[in-house]
Image (cartoon, rainbow over all chains, first blue to last red; front, side):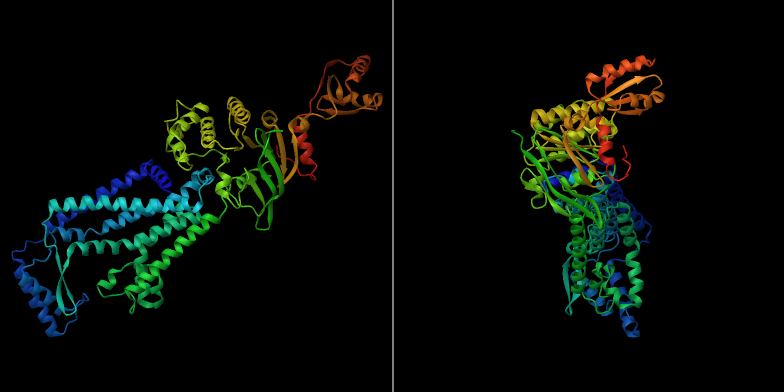
Length: 313
Length: 311
């Protein structure tokens, strides 16, 4: 199995396209930093201290409660006031735009780019063997077909993780150089009181949640690639869904309840974090179960078809 | 005989939906022999080969390679098989050497020395580190043979190995194949629709048509052992054929293009030539015409009702 993965890795890194993808990811990580620096530089200078800002914020929130205006962000104004007061008392500066943590928080779009490349690789890794004709010489070896397919799937995953690692290292290094460290404490309102949470854990979770849809789509692209043996079809469908799937599901969910069974209604787990599920009554558990089911269906399809079907020209 | 059966096809049948592609084919291939698998395009040669190497599944019957069933123990059976199926398609973006590394990793215990040895055998030492996309068709074919020999298989299966090669390339491949069978006691299965090729390369041939095995014979039996046919090159052959038939009613006389083909014994030839001279005809030559494989092939395949053989 290890040798099979070495083979896949060797094939992947013998092609120029792979290096282009890595280059693009590196450039995007650098571009993200430049853009953030630019946005921060044109933002108006705040001559207030953060304490003054929080006090102003609190005054505004109190007024909202008096007038009965609902918090449009989904969170309770009273909770915000409690958090702000806790920050003032314990001298914890909130993370503004120009801190390291906000920079990381705002760089999640890099995940989509990595996802895009992971989809491209997943779409080609099986289908290309068919279009090159090399599948014949690959499958006449004393190795079960499922092992070959599994080695390919793991290789896609490893390549995705590799891109994530490259992005993470670059982002953290650039972030530490160009942004204020900010506060590594995140304040949340939980069970009637304000709790201090780790900012790092929050950022990791944020990236993980954002990765779910690309992980699912990469799995789907891999499945289409293995079932239909056609990389354009796999790339086409998966990228189309990557770009419009979420939005379309949002529209459908506004009118129909069954949208909650669709893939994209469940990939965004931060909807539970923010307390605004796309369809009322959905829970985190429900979504995780749905995701596991989708994943299992994709994998079963890929493995049964790939191991059963004849390889004819 | 010291020959042992290495590949055994038992009532192999392949159906795709309701269509029978391969219909109850059985034959054995022995070690040290080159077995030719001959048939017109679309007869089912490649399908049969794909079933032997496990790319396609059998609808019924079984294939035994070195005592192991392809159906029940695919990995056990196929580890003694080296093959090129159709064209030797390699990873063009990698060097020949990396391609060989790639395939060697899929078997247990293939050393670097073994790879070098195989490269030397096919004569690719100079170009092995170049990318495959720079190779000529002949070089790719040789690289294909190299990958099929990495694990010292007991059976070598080559599907149309000389397809698209120039005469020098064809000869080279043919010599390899003969040498491998002789020196390594390998069983080699070669498929082709080129009859002249098979005649020079194979010990036995099986003829397949419309998914059915028509005939399996030793190549000498297949070509020779027929009643002798003599070809007489003669002026005005077309006009003389009938009167000659009257003069020699015992012989079968056929007019082929401008030559006469006469089926007779050797001792009778002088009488025929004498008759011709007396008739005032110019005799340019008379020779024994060995029936070529092509003739036999057309004979065998056209026994099937009127289906024209594509040669």
